[in-house]
Figure 1 (tube, rainbow, N blue to C red):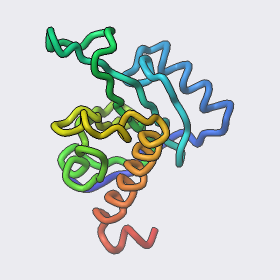
Figure 2: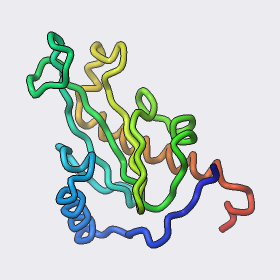
Figure 3: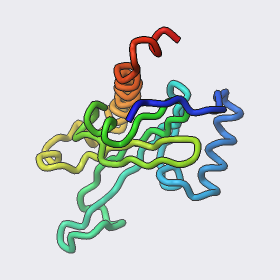
Figure 4: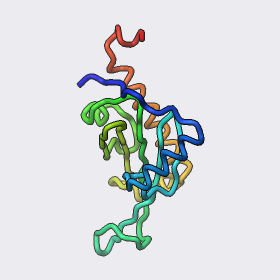
Length: 154
């Protein structure tokens, strides 16, 4: 599917960013409702949170047995479909989350793949923040690469 541009997407300043975060949390939107950090980057709302897994019961747990980060970007202005996002957006382990609503796309990744338990850098919040921002850069690059040559001139 060809990429499209959302109509009437918000341009955030600090005040509208804070208002949008409040709306997302009140509406219990995922992932913002459970995020431990939320920030604005290139007019996208980015978030991270920590998940944990109880190795004995093999269930998600509040017990801190094995924690890992998940990173997400809510993108308002440009849209590519899930198949294109999964195939061309570069991030740790690839896109593992994709969700659309009427005015945004949320993409995300997690750091709990085979071999990640030995990657202590993935437990560093600052590294995950950079990875989420890099995912957004990759998303926009993918979007631009999918445009037809005459659309790139606009």
